[in-house]
Image 1 (cartoon, rainbow, N blue to C red):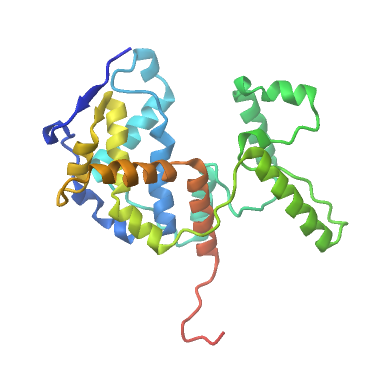
Image 2 (image 1 turned 30 degrees about the horizontal axis):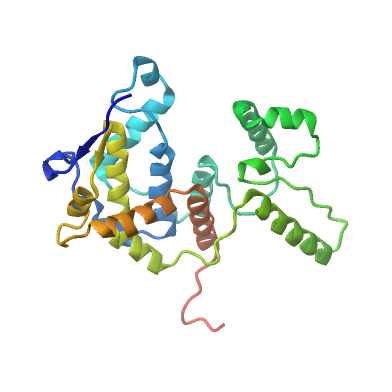
Length: 272
């Protein structure tokens, strides 16, 4: 097992790292934050590094990781697509595995994807569960989209009451609670002030290189005009980064972005 080298000096930072590459972060809206974070999250757990074996380098994930890493080193802030058209964002959400809106019909493609997911995850015991318990909730153990059956012969009130009960029990079982509030402009300003995107990129780079940046070095790099900001890295920046890279956070961002684009903007001069 390789010993991780701890880096403490500014000269140890990668040549490509410049805070100037992230100047547009304060202009990001919900869709923009979702786009920037989801791309980084897709490669964050990738275990492949510069020290990868020849066999690992042939893995498609390695090429995807290198492609994303190259874009990070070149741009810092990825050039965002035009998400003003809700269909474009819906397609991107679908490709990222987040579909939208939050309640939607189960399609044949969805059934096919669920079957593929079960086949690709034998270690989770899903195949065995499917063979021995035909009434096992589909996808529930993954904590992602859950498939249900709706009987339209029931009254609207009965459907709403039943769904509310099912949702409450389901969230308890998968231990995933919904956010109580939407992401706000205050959140976006905080994330920009905390320099979360450049921090994530440095953490990605250290994983790729097999090194570790000290909190002091991260503080000097992300907040060059501040003094003694090590505690800020440990107590604020890194916890925020961990929260933003959580799949449930990114999914919530994507769904909120879709709703904000689908919802027509009301003219301020228009009477309510």
